[in-house]
View 1 (cartoon, helix red, strand yellow):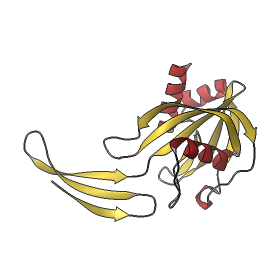
View 2: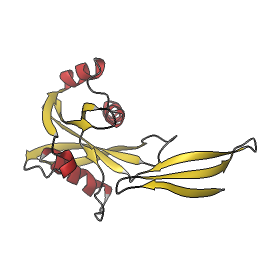
View 3: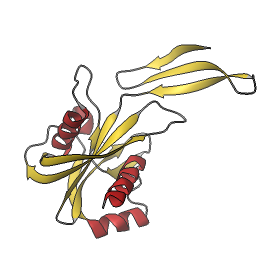
View 4: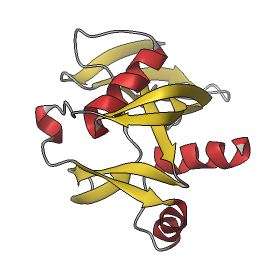
Amino acid sequence: MSSREVYRNPWIRVREDAVVREDGSTGIYGVVERPDFALVIAAERDGFWLVEQFRHPLGRRAWEFPQGTWSAGEDGTPEELARAELAEETGLRAAELRRLGHLDLAPGLSTQEFDVWLATGLTRGPTAREATEADMRHAFVPGSRLQAMIRDGRFTDGPSLAAYSLLLLDR
């Protein structure tokens, strides 16, 4: 019926939508708007490159596949975003980048979606992390170790786990 912005900062917008449900009752639905992002599975030698950083909402450090969105004022294709995030966070450049799929992040809460990319033919270079990523580190993890991290709860990032599922289906 109507929509109003209730909060905005450079990374996020929150709106309240007045809605009419199937049964005719009315209500308010909160929606988080964020730009779409790219997630990159950088694979080589039977393993993967991961990043770890402090995640403020969780109050702890978390391991993930490299991922992110354009900074304000930047733009490009989904593939360019994937290449930029991989280089920025790990310093890696991919000779080959293949899209594995497109997923919704949290459709009951957010408009944000993401593409999952498989990066291979990797070469090293410098990172170009943003100030908010100053504490980030990256590491190569053999596939068997990643599976152990998933099993024992050390690798819990939802988008990364969904991306890994796409990779397993692809293989």
